[in-house]
Image 1: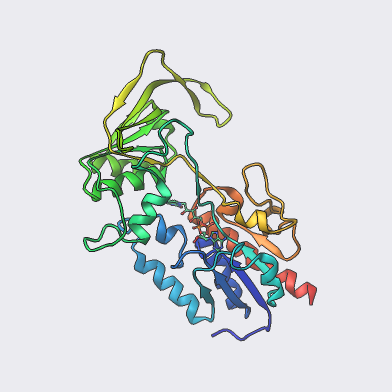
Image 2: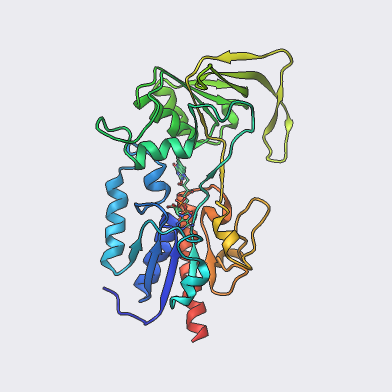
Length: 329
Ligand SMILES: Cc1cc2nc3c(=O)[nH]c(=O)nc-3n(C[C@H](O)[C@H](O)[C@H](O)COP(=O)(O)OP(=O)(O)OC[C@H]3O[C@@H](n4cnc5c(N)ncnc54)[C@H](O)[C@@H]3O)c2cc1C
């Protein structure tokens, strides 16, 4: 156990970013408490990325190692509801690190998105991975679907599709509006999905989700696309082909078209600057925010990115927080 330096720091969120910051600060002698909204620590590593890609025992071992060096992890603690960032300071913390991720799903705003059988990828993956819906005796409700459409072309879409297949779906479609070359998912993830029989409907864009008289999804209406000139992202802009409507028969649609940070922290923390995308604004690599003593990093700052970037930000902020507290005292 590291020797205590007598100072306290609070961390919001127990994803890779929060845990990396917690570990480094605890090793420097800080009393660190991590506040996690869910009932289990680990962030996307436990609720999003499936067991077949990242065995949860690995994450649990890392969490146990942090506890062994004195890090307290308080679960079921939604900061912004149970306690505010200001209250964390009132409790004696000298700095707060916000690593609350980007867990708010985006939807397409097309007709039919409120039908039964439409999930955000986050909800679908959380039900399966965190709430263990894949277990035969699980009480977590989930659709046992025959035909599933996953909308999107990133890692999250690939994970959702491969989970749907493992949950027993016969046909799982990836619907993506650009071509395979533009897919943001890692090449390996796309290859694994193909090996597992996922059907790729690229250059295809949903325009409406169709339902039956009971409000259950029974299809997704799409249009065919073709690639035009490159857009601001540098990728070719998908353009709708005239008279190209088609319907794919599905009973479940999973939206995996991106996420943004949940507004709870920014709306309950006065003076915390955020940008148009709802991400916390920081000063360079230090993670310093517009609020004194408040640091932030990971997806909460960058928007949905990667584990390694989130961990790097947590470690950089731990260093900056240490300097801040030492200079202050
Ligand atoms: C399905 C999926 C697959 C992915 N695959 C890969 C991959 O293969 N490789 C890769 O590098 N990256 C991958 N990513 C991205 C990667 O997981 C994230 O970039 C990374 O987890 C971000 O870490 P973070 O700590 O910033 O946030 P998160 O991991 O999102 O953790 C944030 C934590 O904060 C908690 N929280 C939120 N709000 C509050 C609050 N108000 N109070 C308390 N706690 C709060 C959340 O519950 C969560 O536990 C994937 C993401 C998903 C969703």
